[in-house]
Length: 382
Image (cartoon, rainbow, N blue to C red; front, side):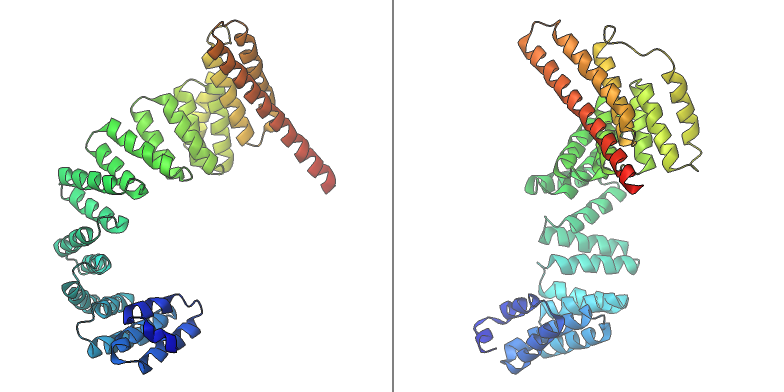
């Protein structure tokens, strides 16, 4: 413990937070009470944090009260005490402690943020908004504080201010997903469809594993009549939520928008399998199945529509667990690309078509291999 005295009290406290075992951490902080007086308030702060981690909220509050009694201008102690009272839902006491914390340290964004939350529970909307505005001033990059601040501005109809604040946030933190999401929502709600699409596109780029990002982008693209882009977005969402019936429904709707009715019928059928009680699915499934009976364009009539229809049908079958049915459609697309490449003279276009043919052939082989794998597993199970 002797070496610890080389730290200043706040650094010594932070070092204690890195002790993983709570019992060892409690001993570390308790030993601080035997150091010089400047360490005592920080030691009690640490003891309270250990008590809080152990769900002994009364013990935590007691330690933090003792800390501020020892050092009345200990801003962090007041912040912790406010948090302690929040834990037991004593909102007036929490507000008093956090007001004291923010008066002693106006740069503490966390204290301002907690004060805003407490005032919501006290039904003080104006006071909450004032506190969250201070939190954003203290730390403009705090995504929680900035998000709540923008919501408050939006609810008050101060959309120009909200947009300006959000655009500044994006400029300061271009890799913060929350900033792009709020910017997209604000632009959408103020009628800037193109700006909203650009913001949500950036969000999807930053968060490619977030299905909601793709869903939001898909809705915007579809509302703008950009159906190819919407289909791409809904397909990305489906890949991330393959067992979600709603994901299949949206995928099916996007396919139907582009008249890829056989693929849409497969998508809606899969949605119905996953959610047999949803009464909204059978009518759209029936319409898609009826439309799928109509002649579809062949490769000589509309080459691009034929390829897209075959590939999306194969995807829908493949993702539905029907790889054996998917393989022939991948092969039809591959063969069409191969044949079409013989009729073009442009080297770049020819290379693209041959690349597509190779990709679709590989997907067909993968689908066949999956069928063989499942058959082998079934045979072993017997």
